[in-house]
Length: 266
Image (cartoon, rainbow, N blue to C red):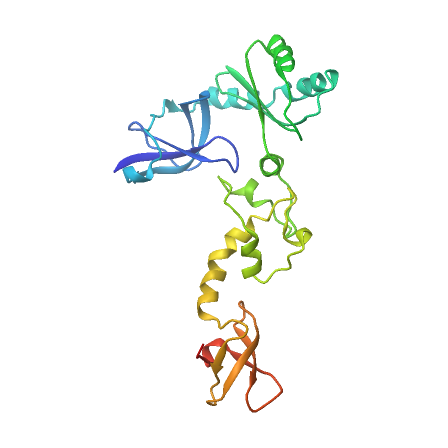
């Protein structure tokens, strides 16, 4: 077991684990740490706790220090850089077919990271030279996908709430069309796709509940025994309410029964 704290560097971003190095942190505190990108300042989202070695993805680095007022001021200034506008101007000047999405600056001002989307591979070597000459720091450009774009920009889903990927999801989970089928949804792409054009993340979120209901709910075509002892065939079922429309041997008119009232034969 090792003591860890969980730190996130952007809202809805992935949570990284660090050793607190004998410091006590509460959720909402900020800490300065060293990452593969350089020195960063992030928000503590998991306070000091013990975690099994097998659950920790890699060797833990220690927190450098708790963020001071000066550190938080630097963090805010970095967020207010005008790098986004400058990069957009350079992209237009060089007529590059790319869409700039976001800009990040490492806490130590050692690197600027520009995130963009594009339909094809882009030769941005000259753009990097332009930006490096202006900002006098290391420049990195990263091409991201449409799901990452939605996570960065955010927005409201058809449910009226903020995108799951923007509000709380650290990583994207695989979503399949099979989930939509098991949940009884229309397979019309416009009905089950998010703003990013990919299958909605909430299909994955709701799948465990539907899998549990599928185990206890007779499927369409199943042969059951009604509370009266009659055999019947399920012609429709509602997983959420548990209601079944059953056609019995003695009647052509379907009856509505609850799944807990019937006994499954096959």
